[in-house]
Amino acid sequence: MDIISNINFENLSENSTFRIRKAKLYDAYIMTTRFIILTLAVLAIWITIFGQIVPQKDPNYDENNVPKFDLPDPLTTFSGKKIKNSSEWIEERRPELLTFFSENVYGKVPCKIPIYQWKVVEQSGNALDGKACRKQVDLIFKKDNHTLRFNILMYLPNEAEKVPVFLGYNFYGNHTITNDTNILISDAWTRNDKSLGIDNHRLTEDSRGVRANRWPVEKIIDSGYGLATIFYCEVDPDRDDFSDGIHPFCYIEGQQCPASDEWGSISAWAWGLSRAMDYFEQDKDVDASKVIVFGHSRLGKTALWAGAQDERFSAVISNNSGCGGAALSKRRFGETIARINAAFPHWFCKNFRKYNDNEVALPVDQHELIALIAPRPVYVASAEKDLWADPRGEFLTAYFATPVYELFGKDGIPTQEMPPVNQPIHNTVAYHIRTGEHDVTDFDWEQYIKWADKQLLKK
Ligand code: GTR
Image (cartoon, rainbow, N blue to C red; front, side):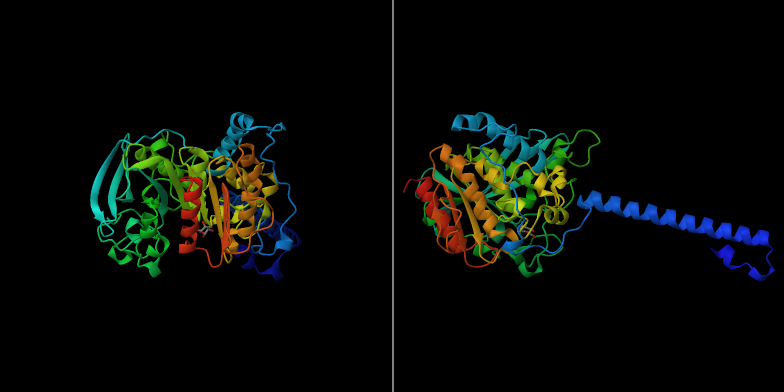
């Protein structure tokens, strides 16, 4: 460019004019080539990150704009065979669905990592004014040069011997769930939330008890249940980094992140819940045949995936779990697969990106995840204002999982009509939509306790 602009055009012969024209053409050619290469590079980066060519428009919150879709029948195998009874479900359909979710949605756990050792690091028989026993138990894992530790905080009612337990992850550390000053503060990486007093990705005294509103410990204890909770970032920090947490334990030489069909973070967190279950089987104060796995939002997705895989969980609760949890993906209402994979690239396995803005190609949907829990009780809960999580889509997964429960003679959701707000259905497949926002409230817990009483304790 510079060479051409410095030439005095008036003194040029025809020959030189021709050469200049050639040079200009050549220059244009270089520019166009550069532009094409740059565009292709940007496109390649875009596709690698987001797995899609056309970015999504605004999220859809209008029922009239839900696309028409064919929902896969949980009772027809991928090869077209109709499932007629519970043994065909258990032997044929359940395993193929489990494999599909494992390799294409959440990612499979590539190696076995048993508990190396567990240690009660703190215990008191006199918690909650003598009502409960408190235990803080470290589970320790070791493999090659890797070590990981996560802590289970437990409150167990003193009056009973072996108690049923609600098990669920918390978002910001065990010390946030009550004001109890004996609870140890985790030193694991955390997401920041200045409104909760959490900064610099570290937990401190400032956040003690800040999430007590979501964990009615006393109500749970008074109802005869224990509560066990774990800070999820101790199992795998919730960030797009596969060099930390439990993932490296399974890497083969030179591997730096999970393969396309291997575990994302949700799968890693679900793995942690199963290790907690391994521990409960050793703890004489816990009735391991009555452990109810619970989770809110991303941790609700986790509870569902843990409950689907590990049949030792006797019941499963999904609180506002939304996309990739209880909501039907094919409805594309609120959060979609493309959006969740873009915002949280580490949650699912890489294979799941094939379905970004391409839900039609997905041979399963989330009602089949719920069906994998059958015949064990499952509770799906929504909140009226939590449109991002698609309350109707959450309700419909419960409804469309029902035929599988019926194979076992269990009662599910009887009609496609959603119940009015705050009027729960407490069948084996349970559902409620409550007033309010994306959250865990006392109303939610009251329902979970009532339903667990009915389903597990036959009260
Ligand atoms: C949102 C995410 C949801 C849900 C939620 C949460 O940002 O889009 O899928 O998981 O976070 O976990 O609080």
